[in-house]
Image 1 (tube, protein in one colour):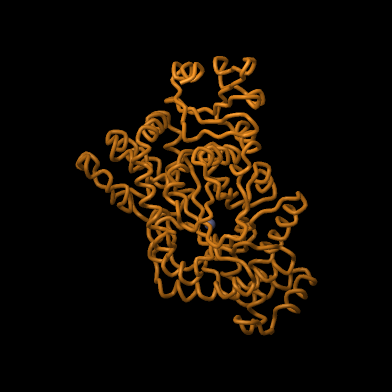
Image 2 (cartoon, protein in one colour):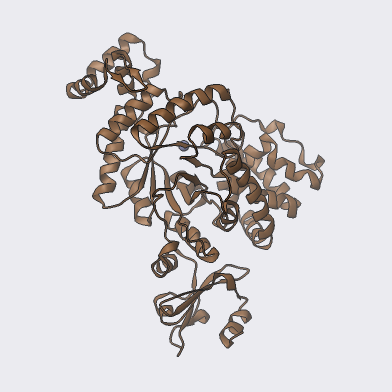
Length: 485
Ligand code: ZN
């Protein structure tokens, strides 16, 4: 141990030897500390970093050093020194997997989980809603992923997804932070009132559309024959245009905005947040028109029929799912992009179909998994904290239901005083308690009585967490038919 290392040890820091890297004559390593980690930089580069505290500043020393806090500013300097820690686009890789990390510490375990699977990981993946609920920003999320990738020496590349963005200003937030994937959520531009109109009312609405819009769609789509799709009747064109034309316009605006900023991203068009399942005709018309306007689609997320509820397996008829999926896949192949499946956590019943029909050239988004597996660590290692968390989650659930649709009922959760400690982990799996814990992450993470012991437990029990998360993630990847090399 050098004298400096002895000093850091006295301050409670331990050098994570596995994370040591060198660039341009300076050395970088993560320092672990019970109350938070830091980045140790020794050599000339230390002068560029901001020390986390006065006693962590050795920038004026003969051999300069500095311990910086793990902030977005530190991450930016790290990414400059080690470009492979910066998020990138998917490029040619066939299967991409969105994981997200709502707790800023899941990525090390996720790296372990995907090891040797043919997966392009999206470690940073947050919607604006998730950012608000966890009180973080896109730069925070990307920084957490960059530090984890650095520590693990993972150089295969990972993506950062600005998920479910609805406006150009939300897209700007994601691009400013360096997101490499943009998921455009068109839900606010989809007219859900059209479905309830009778023929005459619809006709009237159609007549109110600008003449050039009507002409354009009728000339290009009505009563024509398309490969695979066949004939699109005029009435169907009118209905689809009424529901989706503003969504199509938004896709074009968003794409042109991104291009004008000079950004290259994987662009996903998400039309999954509609009332009804997306029909093949809808999918085809929307995607073809979007592409025709110059939008380069990387993935499209249709709304598949059946229920994709948080924390539960797929509810619905898998034969119907597969039949629809085959149509959507055929369209995606004709138009040249991949399909994307949202709310993918725990959807084991449909994964074999999704993997087979897409030949694993697709995108799957999951998110809640890493949070729930962290709660499993709590259930196993700190039963008292788990009990208190679940009690709290039950009372917090009505508020969370404003954001997430769940159908399980809190009455199905057993009286906790009658559950033995050894049986608590089963509550992470039982539908009602699982959904309740799943959707209340924002509120729980905001409570100091939860946060502090929760994060220190995860640090202490990192081995448990990695084991649980790896097992659960690999169940997903295996069901999708991905094979480890
Ligand atoms: Zn979605």
